[in-house]
Image 1 (cartoon, rainbow, N blue to C red):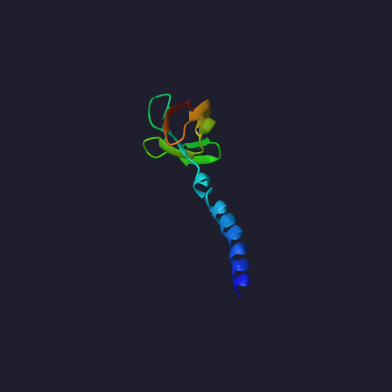
Image 2 (cartoon, rainbow, N blue to C red):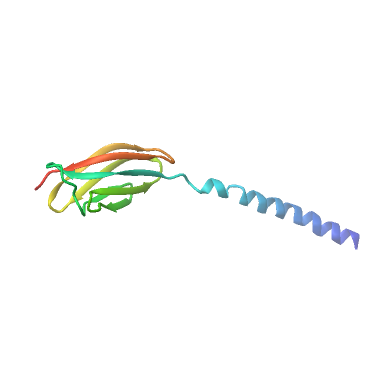
Length: 111
């Protein structure tokens, strides 16, 4: 009887260790995020409502004050602001850092 109990315990130890090792990286999987936020203006200086702002697969639409907010992974992005009544504005190389907000302004010219 003792041998079978010892055998079961010795089999469970590697399984327990494997399960523990599999769970340890879970906090590492929760990746940091970065924020790109700002405002879109027309060349006249008025906020552009309803503009689309894109960066790295994230998309936002500006509110009535021209404000937008994008959550992205930390990295460097080309941020594109567009609106049907305006020419597109692209800002290249915007660095978004982990757990921080990068503020930018876009200026759109009427078509």
